[in-house]
Image (cartoon, rainbow, N blue to C red; front, side, top):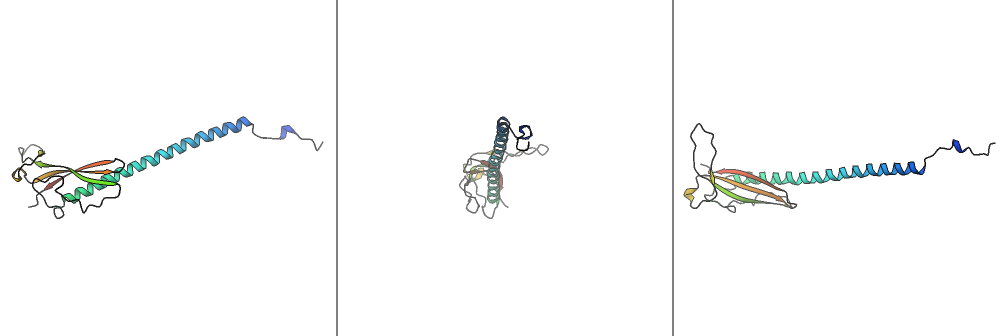
Length: 154
């Protein structure tokens, strides 16, 4: 009987097997897609943070440069120019605070920790060293802060 079909010889998948396979592939694809999305988000966050840090540090070097920004006694946050600093679009950089060395000296054997005061009423109160706080902020709120010490160049 050549024309007769042999039902047992035909292989195939049942509907239940196909549905289980589709569900497994769908769950796996969703997990992989979620991981890739998280990776992209974290990478963008880290890139913004690194750029803000680089902007803050380069601004600190600019402010410390005595040729570009000469020392000003009793300077305020707006006293030092940031006009030569290259700031990428979407970022802002500002000098947040200027503090003044109190002039206190510790005994020689002790570790030296300079004291700073937040106000300078007269130029006589500025003893030639300032701690300047610089803040760089990205448009999405990433903020990096750097402090630099600026001294009078003799």
